[in-house]
Image (cartoon, rainbow, N blue to C red):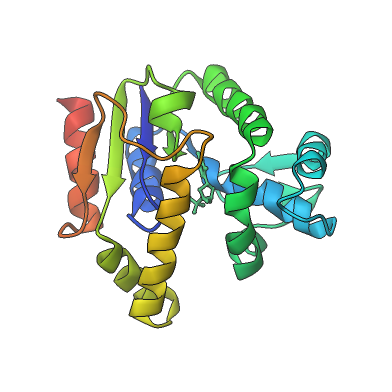
Length: 209
Ligand code: DC
């Protein structure tokens, strides 16, 4: 069983993907963590994330190790740092670089080829990476709800967080390389009014049904 999940930031995708994978006893891959890990490597080398050629070079020379709960970049544990503000504000530029995407998409396909099953989550999994997945999902929620969830988790001002989310969505949806979009045959799940338990149950019913 191969499950591909896309959707915007903060829609609950990662939590759902992790839980569904655990329930099914298969592995889970967070592809956003891969883009973040490359960004961490770029910033660690004090390279401008918009300097395309230098970014591509870093991407090729990085030693990336991504497990279910740890991300190592060149042997350094970057698990917390990849979620920090520096990486978060630079990652869109890195993810917009087509060569970086090509490189990571190959790693993602290798990951699933090796296992033959798994839950893979990101922005272009249903459209580009695994268009033949057994189940394709687009998990979303309104910007307001996503902002409220973020604030409940890590504080901040709802209006400000919502504005950041809207801007990040816009960048992800309008970039030239693999913009975020709903794949044909993808099931759209709007989690605005659903609990995580409801979403997980919904996904599992689609797998079993
Ligand atoms: O899901 P996330 O917030 O960790 O993703 C980090 C960034 O990487 C975000 O700008 C979207 C981008 N991304 C992407 O372009 N393609 C993916 N498959 C996963 C993430």
